Every structure is written in C-alpha cells, then in structure tokens.
Image (cartoon, rainbow, N blue to C red; front, side, top):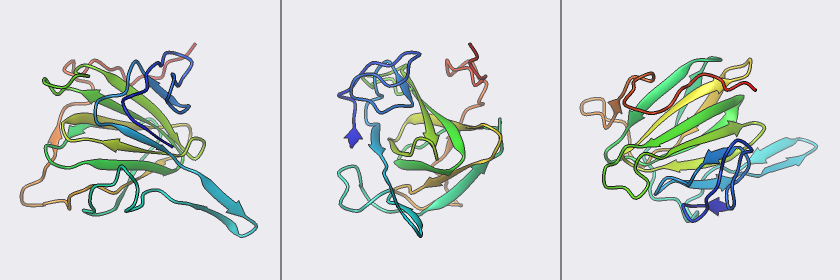
Length: 178
C-alpha cells in the first residue's frame, strides 16, 4: 500500500484516514509517500522488500547507505535541493520527523511524525526541500537504510543543515509522556 497526500487525519491516536499506523500528521506533506512493508516469514527467517524499480514511487537510483543512531540521539535537521530520499528502518525503532519549510508548498508548515522500524515496517519518500530528522527510540540503536535518487557528492554535497533544536522548525524532539 502506498499512501500519498490524498489521506489526512492524525492526532494523538496515530494514523488518520488513509494513513498507516504509526503516522501522526494533520495531513501528509505534499510529495511524501508511504509504503507499508510486508515481512515474508518462513522457517528459515524472513524477507522484506523495501523498494523496487517497478514501484510507483521509485524515480531513480543514486546509492544505498546505512545510518545508525544511538538511543535518544537526534540526527537532523537537513534537507536536499535535488535529492529524493527513501527511508526504511531495518533494526530498532525510530521517530522520523518531516517539516515542510518550502514557502510555495500547499503544505508549508506541516509536521509529519513516523514511528517506524521493526514493529512498524514502512518506507517513506521524502521529496527535495522537506526538512527531515530522526531519533532512535527505545533502548537499542536504530538502523536506517536510505536509497536516495542521487549519489553523494563529496565536492558539492546537496545537503543543507538546520540545528535540531532551532526555533526555525516548530518541533520538540522530547518524548511525549502521558
């Protein structure tokens, strides 16, 4: 299942209409897509497909990399001007947060939270210009696999950073108890 910005809803209970569980969004940020991933288990273990060239959301291949965050550590904010990211958490659990800071976007100012990983396998598409960050939640590191549309350029990186605790982004990374 791939959801796009046609859905809506959200709130403290989790997914709104048209959104998978573990997604908190008033409305999905324009250009963001969600693919619910399926585990295919048997007596040998399991397989989980993440992204296929024939997926509707697939654009092109740039590279694949692994990023690991230790529990409680925030990695973000950053965004790209050209690159589209495809995030999947393959070990542990992470809170991945997106903020639409694009001034001309119909969803400018929206924040989307994704609680994803072993307990909720998702792939999310993050379009250029959308700020994103992640935080490992729980007691173990979170392992993120990204398959962006562009290879990383060490000489001219398409990566722009904002302090994770900056007032520029209306988001508080602290855990919400209650």
